[in-house]
Length: 179
Image (cartoon, rainbow, N blue to C red; front, top):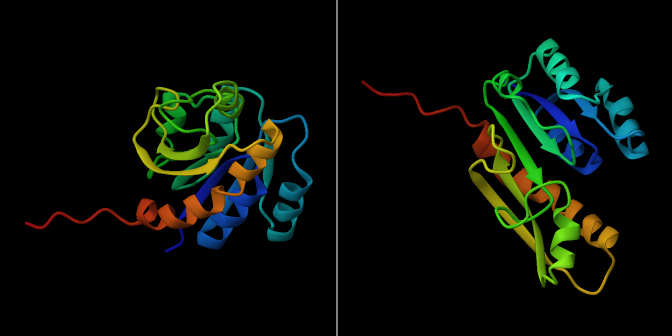
């Protein structure tokens, strides 16, 4: 059985990984312009796209879709509890920062400003509290001497690996209780 995934984000690398794993029913983004890579990938695969700008708009989009799991990566709208409840398998987020140390919207900038030697990404369950759900996995890279945008790109390249390594377990049906 194919798991239907709703993707919220702007990284084509994440969407490509999800499409190889399961069925993607919709890709939504919030930025003024979606990435050309994301647009091209969606057009090629026949994946509908929606731009959302508010939590209410996001809830309407999610409520209109039938999906099992929500995956978030490089998105900026905080999900309401009623939106989280729409996904039978919940939502997971790939946060481009190491949690719990660097939550929020600017984890790359914050890590660089703190002169960290290592930065990373965190895959975690989405809960009502932002960037506070149970951590499923982390991947790290050396910060090095580059600029913040270079570090962001290196972190984005980690996204497919963390998803490939962890989605099978996330998508696995729960063990049935034996009586």
